[in-house]
Image (cartoon, rainbow over all chains, first blue to last red; front, top):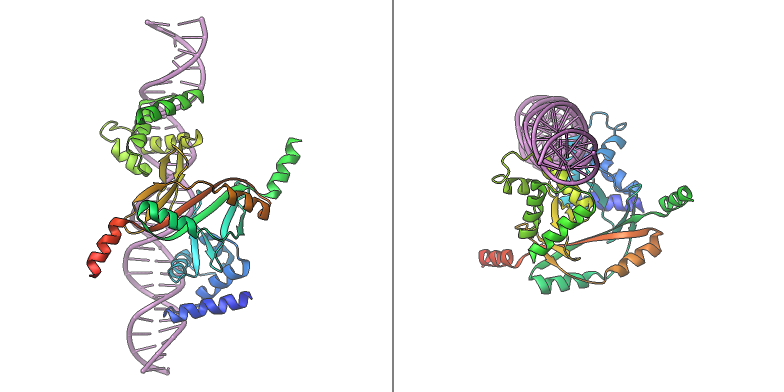
Amino acid sequence: MSELHLTEALDTLKQAGIRITPQRHAILEYMIQFMSHPTADEIYKALEDKFPNMSVATVYNNLRVFKDAGLIKELNYGDASSRFDFVTHDHYHIMCEDCGKIVDFQYPGLDEIEHCASQVTGFQVNSHRLELYGTCATCLAAKQKVSS
Amino acid sequence: MSELHLTEALDTLKQAGIRITPQRHAILEYMIQFMSHPTADEIYKALEDKFPNMSVATVYNNLRVFKDAGLIKELNYGDASSRFDFVTHDHYHIMCEDCGKIVDFQYPGLDEIEHCASQVTGFQVNSHRLELYGTCATCLAAKQKVSS
DNA sequence: TACTATTTTATAATCGTTATAATTAGTTTA
DNA sequence: TAAACTAATTATAACGATTATAAAATAGTA
């Protein structure tokens, strides 16, 4: 099924007249395979073996290309660097403030808030972004252990 | 009423044992008076006349102090630098993707989603962040004018 | 296979933010 | 009120993420 995502993604690029280079292929493959939320640098390091000569700029450039093509989303939390998320279906993120882990979850029906905000502010609303913050089960357990 | 906010803010600092310096006073005053969502640099530039010798580091340091004290929130959108928002009551932000304007709006009752996510993910949820994106009325009008 | 525009690479530059160390200034206590 | 202590400010340099640049390489097409 990740194979399918990859094929679709490559197709999207082709449709848009964007060339498929080995680097682009590898970056997409990586993002789809791990479905994590990597930083540009993490991607860069992960592909170091395969592409010893790849430039960081290539990673950044292509992440932007993918973003413009709607294949990935850019997430920026408070910390230094942006994270990137391969777009599959609509979902939100919850992040552990202790260990930084990001978990996906779904919650349908927030279109209502877009409508509401549109009424109040006069904006034409295009999209929204929702993120939750807390402590994951693992870190919770670890804390309890320490304090007891 | 902004006077009251300032008094309260100064009081919070005093309670927390944080010194009230002229620079801190001025930064708070600025944030409360304009109730905009300035970047650190905007604050720095705005207070240049009053404090010709103030360092950028002072602005950053104090924004962090205020943030730790719960007086302000840090917002980071896709663009380069963080914006800061004086905390009054809970509200969300809607941002115009054309001109960058940020407008506040209220929408109560998103605690439900926190609860839901907690169930699904096993996280202890502390907070959430919601932002909307779109086009403000002014930019909408401008667009319509051009295309007609 | 050859062509051409796009992409990659390597490098340097930029920009926001933070660390450092010396100086200055609030606050506390005598 | 003045000395003393500690925290805050300043000036500067460093840092890290990201982007700009120009030359070299390459994907896609005729």
